[in-house]
Length: 362
Ligand code: PMP
Image (cartoon, rainbow, N blue to C red; front, side):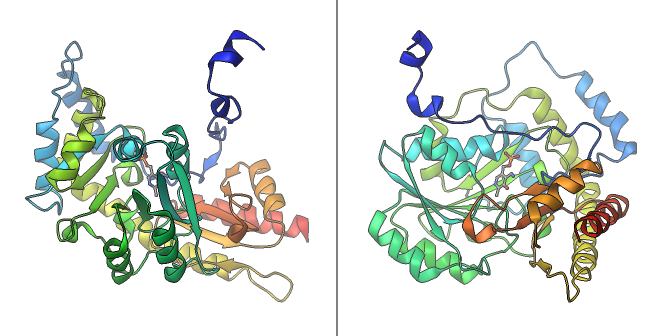
């Protein structure tokens, strides 16, 4: 056994690093990014704003200017506190670290966003997934029973959920919040594409935190997420936050984006409309020989099921189209693929390649 093998945690050694599929030169529809990029007219102004950033100084620890800009453009209740993270990924980690001792339980309906389980493991917390119904709606009796049995410190509800696209009903969230013995995190990563949010109710209950991100809006590379909660929760989670976790370039870029927020909102609205067009196009592939099931989505992606999903995924990849094969992630996702909604042009490239691949496999 080498010195490394004796030293590094055995569960770390047994784990594969998070794989990001190589996408050079591909039509990239695997990661729910906004394909449109920053409107050209804004790019020069952003460059101008970044010029004066003091790169030689550590960031101001509270990110007060960023918070003021965010509050001016969002629905965060006045009395709630905001915490920023290097993506909402980091905040998921911080929440679990603040709440869980080794052996404590983190719970979520599954399939869902994989990082809830990953960060649980690194905190030595036990992740308990509770299966959704086969149509990806919440199995409320099963979740209530599991909460009562396992007493989770933290319950994550992705609203809407990834990779299913399904949004819980607000009344379901309330029911979970009231029954939960600990914190309920309502993860609104896809809020811009849904017609629903729990933000206005975050202070109505003693145990809710709402998570959001700028990633799906067109700033995935900037890495900024935020958590909104009462000061009681925010003050505790803030203690495990690295003091300078959000860098000065990120802050300036997001403050800039917030002053031009209509442009980003317009892009999100366009993608929402494109989602419905793409959904109908996918559905119309169905014929007596080919069963294609397309699930309704409240997010900027669509989940669909068809025979030979892995071969279809590979066929698309050979044609330069990268989507996500999720068929092995959970039994309920057997033969499922997830595609990010993109521009008309890229959606058409995807559909053309899909039709060609299906013809090759027939
Ligand atoms: N929550 C959900 C439900 C997600 O799907 C994602 C990204 N795929 C995230 C959080 C993390 O987003 P980010 O770290 O880019 O803010």
